Length: 103
Image 1 (cartoon, rainbow, N blue to C red):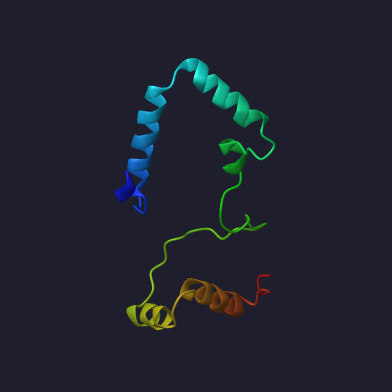
Image 2 (image 1 turned 120 degrees about the vertical axis):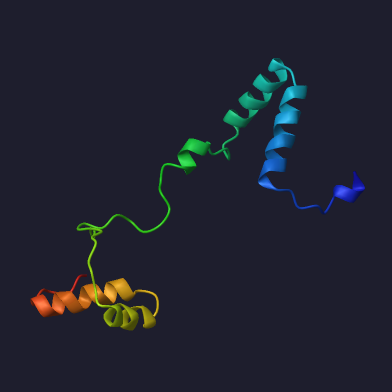
């Protein structure tokens, strides 16, 4: 066991080890462990942690994906400006249409 002390486990290995351990305990032991975890004030249930989706909050007026045909030189120009090139195309089109900038 000492050779495994500093080993990094993959998710699949951890799941396999957890399932192997689960197979070794009785239903009574499992119930006692579950009861103790539920009574622990520091326990956070997995469903509580997964209710919020990661990332940006949903915008009031989200952008809509569309398909548009652009000249290769126009596309190359905007892509060469780096990440956010699609947003810059949006800004250019908003300016051309005389629309207010997005907040």
